Image 1 (cartoon, rainbow, N blue to C red):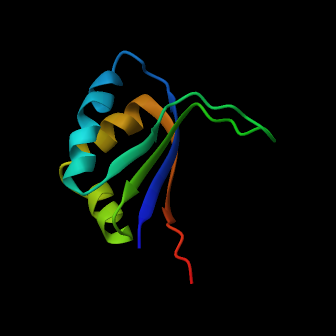
Image 2: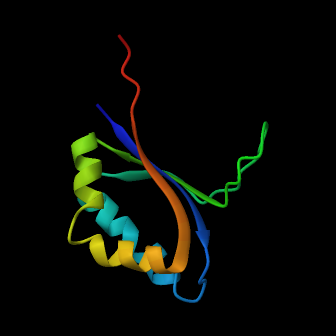
Length: 98
């Protein structure tokens, strides 16, 4: 079953953040992931969503999503993101009809 990594990211150090943005797509692809949303403009309809840079990445499975997040390839990028942003990140299981 597909799985998604969803994130709302607020960049706090815009001078140091660009290397993260540039390097993360290759690591995502390495684990079978693909971006569906990558900081597009949010058009709120209801409530105070508080979205800044909203991201949705699809992975073929929860195992692939976790493998990406826990990988040695992503570790230095995760450290950089942690140092340059405030982030809310979660895994979400995909919908399976039936």
